[in-house]
Length: 88
Image (cartoon, rainbow, N blue to C red):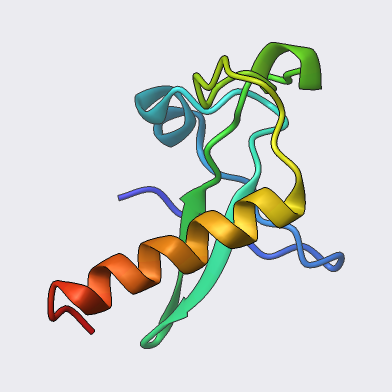
């Protein structure tokens, strides 16, 4: 077991062996949680930066654009159909 100290600035250095074992490079961000008589560090999942144009079409819809009124009518129609089938 390795040990470390809390600095006057509240910083803790994780031993190199721990960082290497988990592949945590400098700059890795962690969520900090109180856990019993200690602290739990969980690395935050990093996502590759994306641009809106890269993900805007992810729903797969290729038809014409719908208005808000069209969507509200479709929702109301769906609710009526569910009620007619005895659901909800």
